[in-house]
Image (cartoon, rainbow, N blue to C red; front, side):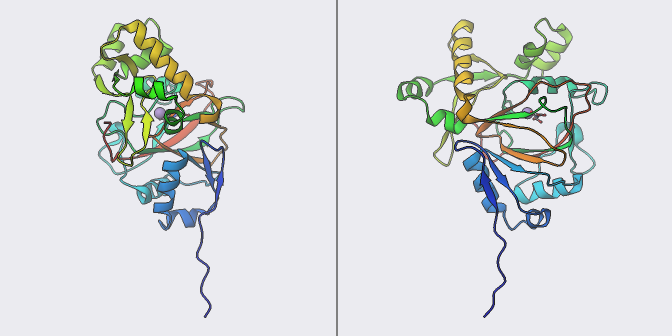
Length: 283
Ligand code: OGA
Ligand code: MN
């Protein structure tokens, strides 16, 4: 008896410790047939690239919904689920460009939420000039795993304070007081440095929102947090994606950090983002 060949997920690995490329068609992806496999791939490889998949905004929203629960962005509530425009050009996006300037430094999205988002999906509408504006990713599961035993023991009990305001000083060392207080108004939270996931895996929770290790001085906090960023962003744990129009990249926000690499804010770079609601609190 003839049986129709079942379409398979077509996967290429990018680097041993991070990244996979999926080469299936739009129709395959939108069918929802690969939800389980894609979620597994995301957890194992941290980042999935769908080269030149060329989703429309509606298709990106639909695809996001095949993977989990669509997470609306704060500024987009009210009129249905849609993509969020990502640009640091204040002339194009006056309300959120200022918050996105921190995205040029290693970070995890939503560290100030008890349950951070599970994943972000970014598609490229207009790339920046070649050699600028890549997005870098670092696998914080792999970085934790590779730590020497004595570092794992040292880090096990640390709790770290995170606030969006801390990112302000990365790009504005002498900020406006009103802006600092507005960003401090978003909040400041304490979460563990090592995230013990329900799966049994562990990842590091660091990035530009992390500012103080509870019980340590500013001096010691800075040394340790910087040491960890340097460790986690070593070549073997990282992947830098050079964008082409139509690329979609999905990252596991619970097991990676990311950053936009420098680009001219006025160059026209435009990304459309959707997010998946988190499923597990930091603990
Ligand atoms: C984000 C982000 C990086 C980029 O959308 O959360 O950090 O390369 N973007 O635009
Ligand atoms: Mn981000």
